[in-house]
Length: 150
Image (cartoon, rainbow, N blue to C red):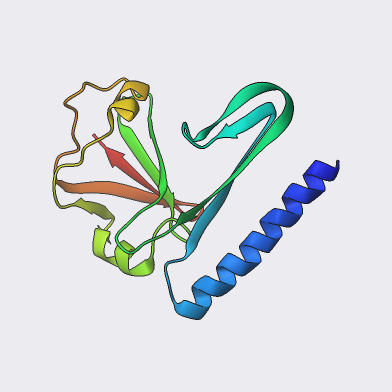
C-alpha cells in the first residue's frame, strides 16, 4: 500500500511541476507520464527495460513531450485490415499542427510514411509497407481523432 501512495504522490508532483514549467515558458506541453513498475526486477539502463531478479522492484518513469509538428497516438489494424491512427485532439497534437494536418475531415500526409521493422512485424505488414502521401479521411469520437489509412 505504501508503494501505491508513493507512486501516486510522485505522479502528482511530476504533473504539477512539469505542467507549471511548460506553461511558464510556453514550451511544448507534456503528453503523458508512463510508469513501469515491476516486482522482483531491476532497471537495466543499458537495455532500457526492467529485468528479473530474486528481490526488489523496478520503477521507471518516462515523460512524453509534445513538440510542434508531432502527433502522439496509437496505431492498430481493424477487421478490414485498414490501419487506424488514433490520437487525442486535446493532448495528442498541438493546435497549430492540427490546423496544418487536418482540413475538411481529411488528414494530410505530405510524403510517404515509413514504419520501424518492429512495428511492421507487430501489425503483420510487409517489410516494404508505406503510407502513401495524400489525404486520408478521419472522424472525431469523444475528443479522439481516428485516421483511417487504406
